[in-house]
Image (cartoon, rainbow, N blue to C red):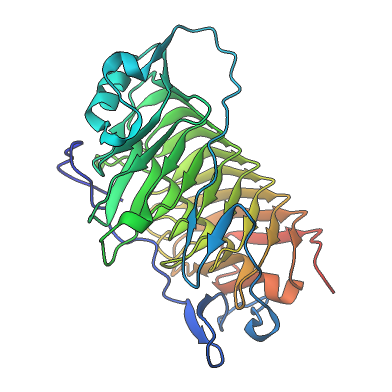
Length: 390
């Protein structure tokens, strides 16, 4: 992914790199939903999702799901850090946090003026879609009940918080609302809660990203065109709810870890997975990606997708992805829990492993796991000790 002529005061357009060529529309009976399905034929199809045998589950009581989207109104949680570094409040930089005022400029001033200290976000701020840039050595903490919510917008591309080409960033308990219900955009899929591009040594704890036009969290190469990946990124206890495209997209990264995430009610534009690991091109890296105890719930496309269609090329690649303890619940009809798709080597080299260990899936294995159009001379895929219904 390459974005040129960056103006951090304006929303940045991103290319549509995460489209599904092989997602088919499965039209059910009268009055039913048209659902994007994992499945189909290929040179190696370990299983095909059986759309006729699955029923849509009701969402949890903390959110609502319509036939295509959900709008979430859960409550921000409290931070738990005991860091003794000097704390400065956002209000000291003129942030109102009254739920009405556009606080973007004041919040950016607070971020820029608190580098090396802890910036405490205290209120319910609103900002426009131009978003906020974190800096090297930024440490931002959200107080209990604090949040940032977008004002009405028409753009199809935004990043509420950008962590771009910086290092040593700590973000605690951010509660970010992408306000999809206030969008007048008619297309697109690039509205992100947190965007991490060539971020290094990044720690994000207990983030909540709801109602984003695209993804809750997006992790990728540098936007400068240097092809520097994001490195050493740890995200603990992420909750994505009601986002249109993905809970999380990882297009390039080394040393990326998600611990105990919950990705739910993802619906609105394909692929509509809890997690999509999908490189944009041969310049990406997928090294030491660890997804620990993730839960995917009511994601319209499916739970977790690894899609390598654009990855093979002149530079040989080695993939290392380990998913452990994946729980998939509330499966949409026609959706799968775990899919690996579109590895065609065409004479190039893509090696390594993709492992799902000890998953607990709520549909039979034949419907839960899809391996589609996958060259067996490339990256090895394994599912070990799955627990599924008979």
